[in-house]
Length: 109
Image (cartoon, rainbow, N blue to C red; front, side, top):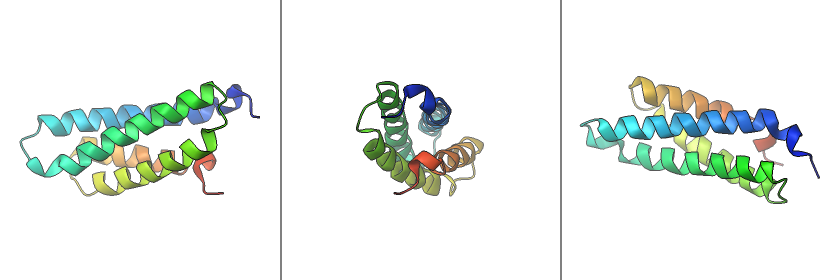
């Protein structure tokens, strides 16, 4: 089993992604444009999955591989949605999600 210290770089990527998603969702909620509902939903799910995956890494859980694959799917979906919106926070979220999804630990086996 991998030592949790081997996951530190990955946990940083997940934390950054979760923070960007939370910030994006909060900003979208404050906008008057009602067309961001899907963005908000995906951001919230992605943030939760990124945090869960990082927590499982800290625990050195046997479920890290499964959680990381689900996290990758959420990151890709969130990036795909956010990139469609012109706002800066959505563009930043899309970029951060894409970086997280490209983490080698998240690559399909």
